[in-house]
Structure formats: C-alpha cells, structure tokens
Length: 69
Image (tube, rainbow, N blue to C red; front, side, top):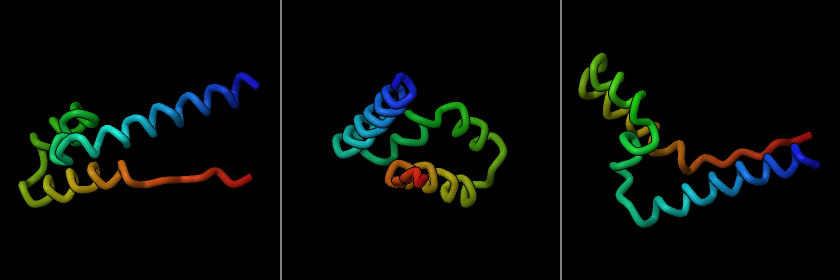
C-alpha cells in the first residue's frame, strides 16, 4: 500500500510540473529543471548541438509513459 501511495505522490508532482509549463515559456525548462546538466552542456557542446539537446529537454515534459504489467 505504501508503494502505491509513493507512486501516486510522484505522479502528482509530475502532473503539477507539467501544468506549470503552460504558464511559463518553454525556453526556461532547460535552466529551471535541468540546470546542472544544461550548464555542463553549455561548456562542452557546439551551439547547434546545444540547441538540439535543449529541445529534447523541453520535449521531455510532454512524454507520458504508462507501466504495463
């Protein structure tokens, strides 16, 4: 029962983060949610590859996955 509850809490946090995206610009996603990764990418990637990587970070907030038993 505790495991189910913990999973529901995690799911609720994800839903809340997704809902906040409509109120903010998607350009903030890499720095707000992937700050340390984004800083490392800025140091080592070319601008074109950095833009593609940041685009993947933005798109990751629209992925939905379902566990199938």
